[in-house]
Image: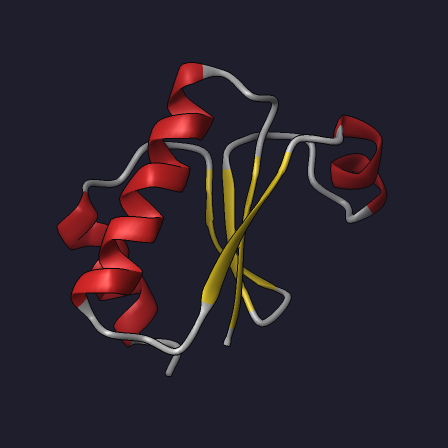
Length: 79
């Protein structure tokens, strides 16, 4: 499973990254969470609003800041 957090590096994006890492650990998923802050790359991927959470290349969240529990629900639906 490939999980990415895309964002500008702001506090909301950083918090989503931390929440996602915690959710992955609590679910014991075999996945590494990548944090991408390269705005040009994010735009090239077709996103204009951050933060974005992707699983296997598909956006499961665009904008907003879900709790660890909400991230777990998003991840569980993509296994």
